[in-house]
Length: 176
Image (cartoon, rainbow, N blue to C red; front, side, top):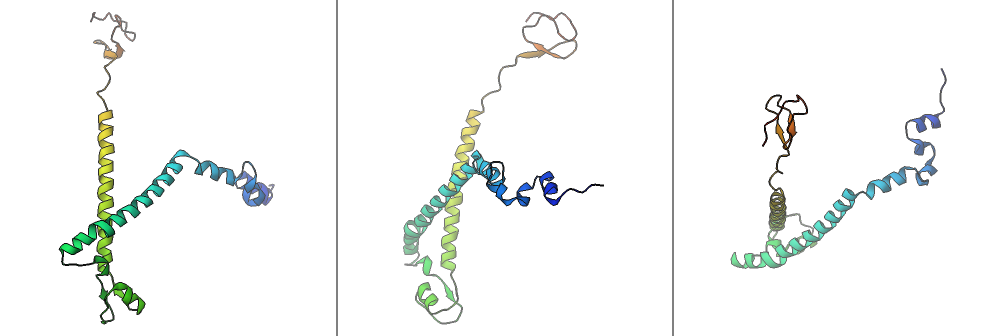
């Protein structure tokens, strides 16, 4: 029984880059495979989607914190949701920032409510987007095309509509 060298065994298994690290930077190495993977259309589309999603998330956060919550807080009696918290030390603080500066642990349920509103708005916006896409897809799905074949009345095989004789059983077909 003949044994291959460890490098030859790695090459046989498709892992030559482990035996020769400089192969990573050669034309057929793992770096080229990664480049091919990263440059596929789906990966680039996903990257663009993530970047746009992050920007959209910042817009929604600003909308909730700067536009939606101040009037809602005013309606609820001049409440600033970002400063709704419970100090776990039992001491009273005016703001979350003051409690954090004093090193007091806090339960920031107002910030949690802000995040719930952010999530709800993002989820609703995505729902509207998906609903519009699905509606457009449904409109694209037109009626099925007109049939181009008919079944032979004798052998039940499909034959062209204009056929006068069945190509399968050679029966004479009635004229349409």
